[in-house]
Image 1: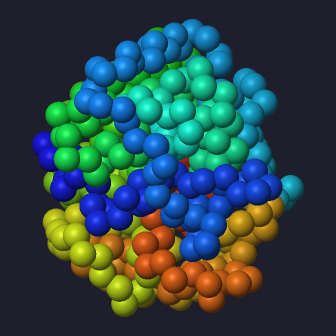
Image 2 (image 1 turned 45 degrees about the vertical axis):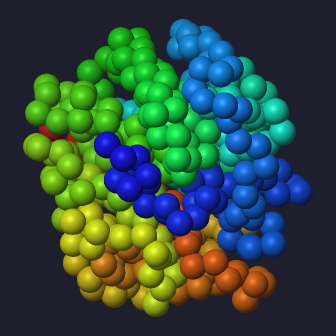
Length: 364
């Protein structure tokens, strides 16, 4: 598989895989302002894969190798409003969250894979994707988010595809090991939501195919949110796209782009699943901003109803420019870093609805 063409949609942009860069106040703002975000990699892997020794594999029996665990205080427990409940400890469902690329080329990051023992990288992950994305799901289930030796951002764009493939294999080996540890030590037969973004979706697709698709575990799949990577509608043999807001055992996917703009890369149009996260439909019905009950642009505790609209168009999710102060500076057409947080409350409410429907149907 050519990871640049199939697994990663933003071939023309070196910055698209980035999970975001920290702002001066430590918040991961998802690249919505051009002057502060989407900066190119300052450091790329040194030589081919193996030129430097790979970081050691994580032991998932150690709590430090998890970015989020339900019985520990972490950023997945946070809520942007006190009115939103944290239902983790009382829920019958688990959420397995796979974070996007945060190993993006900072000083000293010359290996093809990031170390789970890198405190700076872990803080970037925790203060960014775990806070702004994983926390979406704490109203629906217990959130588990493993650290893993993620592939360097440049692995999506390098001409050295052999090294890139090896880097992604290292990353997936960790994701698989973490999920197996979770099944053996935490799951206890509970239903599961899989949620992932960007590189996390690259690995999440493979994880679902290996563990769920046509396997006994498929019966315990509440839903999968595979966001930020193009997922073909027929990628799984037995798991189908979600077509209604309360359907279970299915998957959702979208890639967010500014309305009226098309990327240089092939969107593969009708082949790719695009879920409208304001309507939870896959047709091209337009959803106005009125359907957006709350998204986040900058400050985590600043929910903004109506921040964007949404419409499915030719393999993409089109939105108009987000509404927030100084949004006129937003010249970028690719809203990939905001795939989840621009629809924060809509995704949160939908995951709760699917969880509730699953429990009612299955009797857990």
